[in-house]
Amino acid sequence: MKRRDFIKTVAYSSVLSSGLSWSKQKTKNKYLVLIELKGGNDGLNTVIPYNDELYYSKRPNINIPKDKVITLDQNIGLHPALNSFSELYKQGELSIIQNVGYPKPNKSHFASIDIWERASRSKRSNGWLYELFDKNSTDRLIDSIVFSGSTGLFRGPKSNYIKTKTISSFIKEAKLLSNRATIGDAKNKNQQYLANSNNLIKKVAKELSNQKWGSLANKTPLDRQLSQVYELISANIDIPVFKVAIGGFDTHADQPDAHYELLNELNNSVSSITKSLKANNLWNNTLIMTYSEFGRRISENGNNGTDHGEASCMFCTGGKVNGGTFGGELNLSNTHKDNLIYKVDYRDVYATLERKWFSVENTTLPNPSLNYI
Image (cartoon, rainbow, N blue to C red; front, side):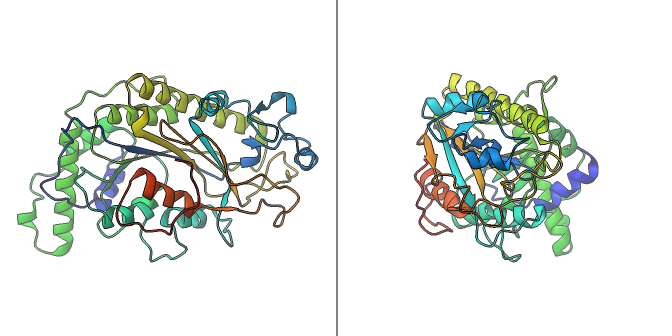
């Protein structure tokens, strides 16, 4: 991690109660692992309506041929790169949430991911998970570690997360913090904030340094992130959310090959962490979810790609999911400007997490209609 990036991490973090520490209890913690598909994933070439002729007529050059689709039922199937996702689905351990979006969708990458992560269109709103944890204070080391991608979910006036590419680099950089930056030395609010942040950084680094971290050599970018997530989960660290990301989904041109490589990396990386979690009896305590800022248009463009769209799909997997498809059928005949019309508000997905995964007393969103976990 570059020093300027580490300073940003310090600025985003704030001090926690001195009573919080690494989880030593025998009870296993629960974890949410979020995978951001950066750029706007093409949901129609991910979960494919292979029996709908409109799909093939609107995508004559970039469609997934019927004989290549991994069929799930008589209407939909998965991209051929997602064979491990298919196995999870057959085992009842994968939920596919279709037609996910929100009213009056914004097709700007930055604006839309901001809306997703604030659970609001208001720039004054804090991150959704920041609000959730702030209203439900429990003993935890920090709220999240973000290995890649946006951090809007966790942003607020007293954010309690860190962002780093690797745990080892975070520990190394933390040792460079000045020991003189203490709360007692602070002469104004800004100095006190930095002192508090420094203390938190050093505290988290001390706890993380108690573990031995494995090699990240010869791994894909997403696999490097998820392998570290697995090590943190296996250590039963008291951090409820881990955020990772894979970029490149803004497929305006030459989509087929690029999309295959991206989904193949997603498939293999999720398969790897899934096997490790199952082998060590951690599967029931972990929920892995994908999300993207928007989908793609139904029709292909003139460059063998797709342009920014609206509704798309999400995956959710873990030992406690209710496997199957949710969100209704894909309808390519009733559309909005050549886009899928959303049927599931993404905030319903969040609301289900609040009640059924985090089981909090103080929720931030209305009752959901989904039952994917």
